Image (tube, rainbow over all chains, first blue to last red; front, side, top):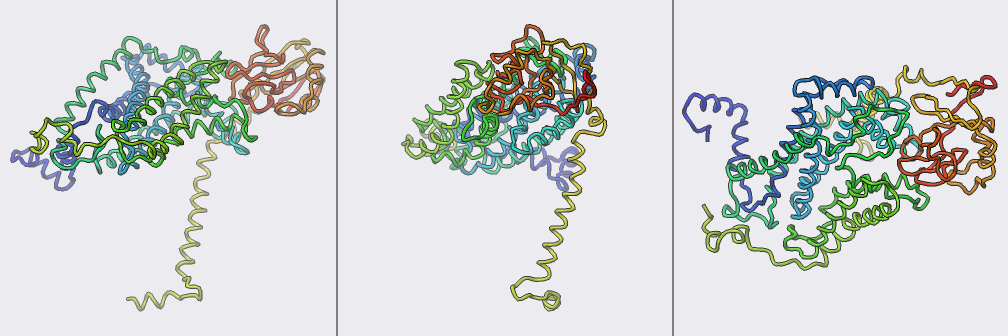
Amino acid sequence: MPVTGTGRTSRIIRWIDYRLPFVTQIEHELYEYPTPRNLNYWWNFGSLAGIMLVIMIVSGVVLAMHYTPNAEMAFDSVERIMRDVNYGWLIRYIHMNGASMFFLIVYIHIFRGLYYGSYKYPRELLWMLGVVILLLMMATAFMGYVLPWGQMSFWGATVITNLFSAIPVVGQKIVTLLWGGFTVGNPTLNRFFSLHYLLPFIIVAVVGLHLIALHTHGSNNPLGIDSKGPQDSIPFHPYYTIKDTFGLMVFLIVYSIFVFYMPNALGDAQNYIPANPLQTPPEIVPEWYLLPFYAILRSMTFNVLGIPSKLIGVMLMFSSILVLFVVPWLDTSRVRSATFRPIYKKVYWLLVIDVLALGYVGAHRPEGIMVIIGQLGTFYYFLHFLVLMPLIGKLERPRPLPTSIGAAVLPAGAGAAGGN
Amino acid sequence: MSDVAQSQVSHGDDGETRRDFLTLTATALGVVGAAAAIWPFIDSLNPAADTLALSTTDVDLSPVQVGQRLTVAWQGKPVFIDHRPESEIKAAQDVDWRTLRDPEPDSKRVQKPEWLIVVGVCTHLGCIPLGQKQGDDRGPFGGWFCPCHGSQYDTSARIRGGPAPANLLVPPYKFTSDTKITIG
């Protein structure tokens, strides 16, 4: 530990640390932070998401130095970044594909939490802060997608802001307020740029709270049982720093394949056509990471109890994310890990399939069989959270839990000795 | 010390003190003040004066032939002008409008039956319906068809099928002469 040394550097560090205990804090959270010894690779995605946030902020700050947030010039300024700015193509492709990677990582991170019950006591707030981060990410990604001012930017912005017109009485006023005009236009682009730059730093702040909540009770683990003593945990450094670094290397290979070999595979060709307010593209689809929610939005094709289908669709779409906030209380089972929950485990995979199916529907025109699959998928999504989760927790008989993490994962006899 | 504090606070019959009253009124005034201070920031997001200044558009209708459709920009939005032939007018008038999703008779949507003037923005999620150009898909009701989510409008631009909740909006406009209109 550096603070105990007697060299000049250590003395300077000690001088600072006595007044601003930064180093002590880092040591405490990194070296001494006891982490369950049985974390698997699904636990890599939290730190990966943090690294992705940093990559997005760094590349975004540089892009903002070359970008012009004006409806007349935005598209050309992005093309200038691509063609004339030194390594502009690289930085933009890193940022563009980074958004997709960020969502991929965060979705895996969320489904990890759902499988292993990471939202249960005492980690409810940790989970809810995560949902806040997801909402902020979606808003940030949506506004970032508008900035290149291509056809899909413009019409995506039009469709999404028009969602608010479904609100009774004040809907249209709110939409005009969002636009700063009578359509999506230059004022809209300006404010979206401002917010797109602001929100990531708010995400950083919420991530800070997320980490404080995490470090208060420590990580959950694949067995979902609490750590019962030193034999159940190992220090975060070096054991998990090295595991996270290995995971990062693997992830960077995947990321690089997209950035260097298929940079536009996840985008829409329509967005390389400058925005035209008088011409709607043949089909408006959001980026892939918003497709399941888009499918839920479009699933309502009929009015219910006199409430217009459009309003219900909007409410369902927002509810599909807001329902995550109450998952800690919807799941009535006291067993965290699905490993020990035979029925929930199956239903969990049905939810995964359901969300993937909704994503598939969201990418296709709402015609024929797609409408029906979308409606069934939406129904099942809410059935899972609102009915199956509470019910299975009550009815299911979980398998017996191991007595401790150490006992379960160490060779017989080593658990009591505390490993190495 | 406690004696001084006691003497400064006069207790009312119902146990409420002068201090409670002051706290309440000061908080209430503070909230009002904060709201008043926030309002300029919110209102600054509303359309600015120069945006509002572009709020009317003049259109000369004389070159538009019967059966022709013209698109003009008003407040940045497309306005559909349809010089309706007799068949389109008849189709719009003959339908029993009371059974429609957004019930409105054709006569309330036009000033002169041969000129239908509507904002060309789908009332679902704001796409621009097809039907203005020759060869466009006009949908099963001969009016307009929105490609985004399949809303169908008739020759009075009323919603007849698909997810949109309302008819295409009729903008405020007036005939300044027989062949000229001002929209807005």
